[in-house]
Image (tube, rainbow, N blue to C red; front, top):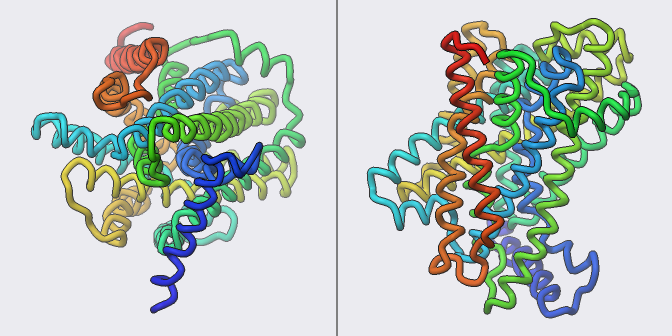
Length: 432
């Protein structure tokens, strides 16, 4: 009982001292950056969660390489948004939900909280289903039992935070690297067309309303509302700057880390889609619309090793992203409404939708795709509030947005709104 209470301050002091050494110039080069590695990698796991598996595999199987440009665009959007969120925490020492509660009318703050909680539940649904499917396919564990095991595993991951922020950051970062290694193997085995990847990563294409649905789903699966809130919470108290110079130094390290983590996440998302395009679309398996079907089809096409690697990456994604989702839920609730529930209570409550889906026998992958569309619809709220605060000099000080940052982030918000309007119009029978 006494050990954690002793080790927490020791570990956090070491981490803080390492950051201070970088700020004072005692650490140079890559060693100066290392103490600041963590927050963006935790946030990045949400950009390669099971919802990404579902939308990217379905998009690649049905449309080949043609929707890769959507992945590239969404990844660029995510990088800018996450950088702004991290900067907000560094500049203000507060997270985005806390600032909403402080500056907005109570009714608006409560409304944003409700929208955010729905988004967090949609996120948890995707993450729980992904990990549960991975356990079922890899170890033949029944879905309902797999849901329990996923909940227990993610709770244990979150318990690492008792020993300071660094162990949890390192563990999540390690899982990100596992997913990256898995898709490096999948790329080697699937042998995608480099010319097709390059062409369709640059040239936009939107063939029909189903492609539009998947495009919005890809954006919803890539730019995640809950980590827009979370990232500001991860940086707000990690190391306290003594002056504006230190704020700028911390922000510079953070910017490099965001570029590293989100670039890796973008490459992994592209790999998910071009692997599906190469293996499924090119062999005539264009109706692959579920993760179990993708797994069963991979085995005869690429062998059991490739299928096993695919499931290992799915498990790593499901467990880690579920833990990150719970962290985000705590930041959202505490920031918007000022109270916090025990971690195990939030874990149990957010498991309920997954239990219902499993018990009703609803197609898990279809549910994953729809959940990502719902996330995309919820996305403008955190982006618009983030833009509002980061453009105000009285709040951000010397780290206030440059005009170009505000312009491009506003363009992202408008683009997401237009895509959602087009999706609703198409769903009501309109022709795109």
